[in-house]
Length: 159
Image 1 (cartoon, rainbow, N blue to C red):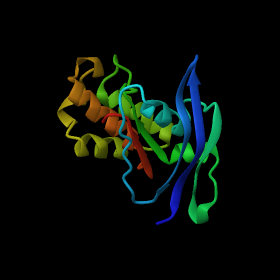
Image 2: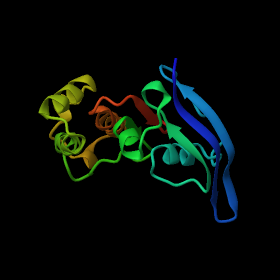
Image 3: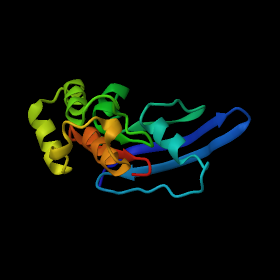
Image 4: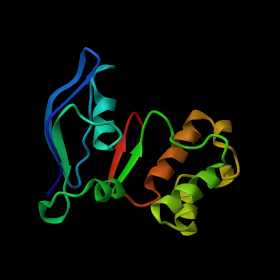
């Protein structure tokens, strides 16, 4: 399969502590790649960098499109779905309101919201505020948010 991500010599430091030191790898289409390490080893930091939520101190990474052509940041972000430690949902809004909001941001319509609710078994929770949901239901709502726009790549931090 074609390479979809190339990471070269990434470094990240917080204060006096090196979190990432010379991380390099390639990921190919159709692969499932897992990062395994101790707490504080930089897994979340790496995912945040790859999602353009954090800048590396050194090194670079490229999301690649058809024919190995580098994607712009905007084009790459459209192809990503991200679920982090936090649900990235508005707690005072209902599940449905959150999904409608993110669907509009992704340029998707109501049909994508209905598909997400059905796929993740959230129909009976659609009118519940996110803050009122259990941790597991919040995580399902976060996954539905991340997949609303049918991303090519999912970045999951402790899903």
